[in-house]
Length: 189
Image (tube, rainbow, N blue to C red; front, top):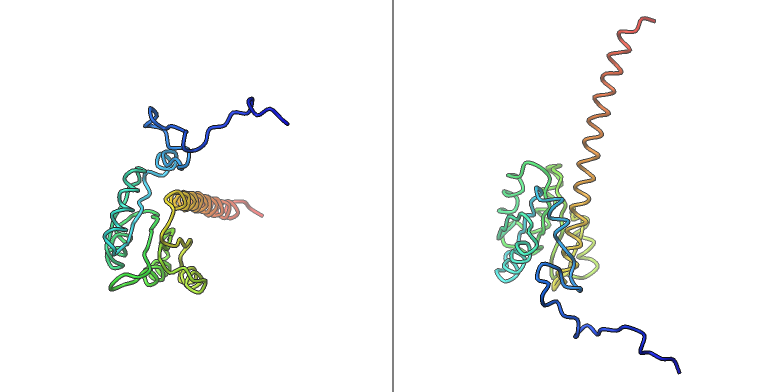
């Protein structure tokens, strides 16, 4: 029989996070690096249910993200149009007036860089396919795990950052191509 006295073990119910208020709990993701890196990118939340809207609002506030909270698709579109740069949005599918799918389609028609997370109680495969086909970049089913939501937000913010870097490189290449064209005209053959 092996001696287990040398193996350190702390069951989860004995791990204490007391005395470490500035550190995330061992079971939670840390939002601080993402907030520090992507502080300028707003998160627009469209949720008609007061309880869900309040929950998401408090999570975003706790995590430190810059958020715009809206109650329906029309308010979400207005908020997204008002943002100058890229944005991330979390949309409920079923809302009065303009639903989340319509917001997705309009965002994609506008060609504005918006990372869309569809957050809905509709979890059938057909719904997921329809949501992604409408233009959602990600799909999360309610009830959701807050760590999964944070992880998906972080993925969306990284993708927005990569898109911005790529767009900047394309502009640099277009400028360089124009300069090369000018030089060709100046060099006698």
